[in-house]
Image 1 (cartoon, rainbow, N blue to C red):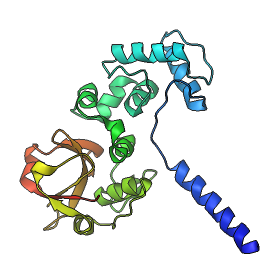
Image 2 (cartoon, rainbow, N blue to C red; image 1 turned 180 degrees about the vertical axis):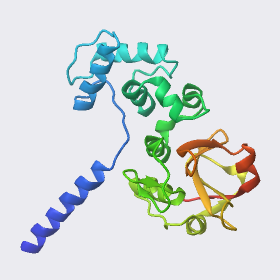
Image 3 (cartoon, rainbow, N blue to C red; image 1 turned 60 degrees about the vertical axis):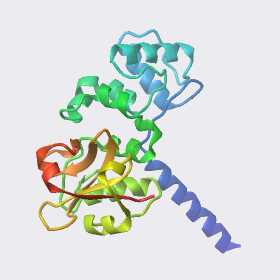
Image 4 (cartoon, rainbow, N blue to C red; image 1 turned 120 degrees about the vertical axis):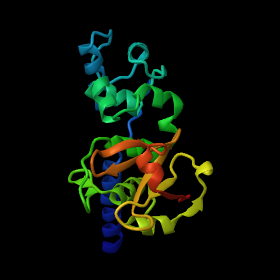
Amino acid sequence: MKRKILILILFFFISITFSSCSFAITLKPGDISDDVQNIKEKLYDLGYNVTVNKVYDEKTERAVKLYQKEAKLPITGIVDDITYQCLTMGRMTVIEKYKTFDLASLARQMDFNSNPIIRTAIRFMGISYRWGGELPSTGFDCSGFVQYVFRLNGIYLPRTADLQYDAGRPISISELRPGDLVFFTTYLPGASHDGIYIGNGKFIAANTSTGVSICSLDDPYWKSRYYGAVRIQ
């Protein structure tokens, strides 16, 4: 009996731990939460017609659609990751985090919310680079970032880029789809740097100079160092 109780307690704490690691945000009509109230406070401060409480009602949906239209985001009436970041940090701040890539253009070209790996990865935009880093609180290196993002989605990868390359099925560059891993030869021969492909010729990675940021496979630096790609699932 005591063993069963201990198992149940352990399962409870594991569940709490994993739920607290989720960074995905999707708020929609009918939701009731503190996150909804936080968003409504932001909308109210920006002059939108909402009643600040925890309920995502029709008035909130209309305000979100209006905000998305004015911010040049996809008009869905749903607060996804990109809308949430724009509201809480300011659209120009988020675009700056995405470096030279236009946030709204990326959102139109790629449905971030349809892919849990990508949805998780973009939550860490701007986290600084740290050699050997494995956590957002201290910084990431390239493979630490990849490992962490996949672990939050229940997929456990080896720690280093070369072993992550061996963990997947090799694919050609023409076969790439969001969630695949792309690899580069940088400071060591072979697969010594990696990132997560997000679509449209772009990938997200923890880079020494820019931290977690979006890069292009067509960039001369990355193009000349491209090593290969693998699919984990």
